[in-house]
Image (tube, rainbow, N blue to C red):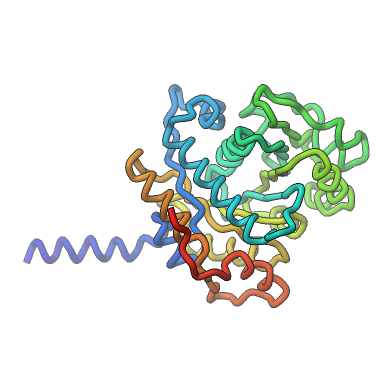
Length: 310
């Protein structure tokens, strides 16, 4: 009786926990593509600057392997959409439903991983409310995206080179009183157009989706979006709301990255092959339904029922 009571309590507590924890949760509960899992990055003195550049400092770490698998999944998505007419550049946005999900660390490591493959990458700190990229990479922030958006400088004048080959950064610049209005201005579109001429990938770090509307606005100006969920922290209802905000745009919703997982080096291979083998399955979000204008392009990514052979 004691054993049965204990099992009943455990099952009851499990039912109360509605957070996203595993790739199965991403596919079953969110009905979204699983792009890859990123382990919690443990570094000496818990230095966030070291954590953000882990893929550059230790190419053989589980973190580096995780981001390389995510890079592969992104390339598969691009190939599915572009077909025989590949684009010269892609603008992607990485965001999360809520704060403190680790999106800045993830987007910097993803940018470095893309740069390591030979692509010209521009990281843009489009979080004009709580910018952090300049702190993580040791860059100055006296001028940046804000200065361009108010017309004080040209697009090329706000780009900063880094010590990592093929990687450039545009910091946020001074804190503006009206972030949403600046991001909604025609100069933001002009900024992205100018960046396309010089870079293969432009990655936008944005505020979280639910607290403010900046990320929702920017999702309509990029080619594709990625949602980051924190394992054991992101609630299912929040992740679904974030997913639906991204699906309601005329762009490519690539899928979900699961952050802060407790995976080992051996379990990395399970996550890696699961992401590749599941990537092409069709999925149809059930709540709410996608608008007709957004469905065609999203379904073009997931319209194959054939597994990828490894």
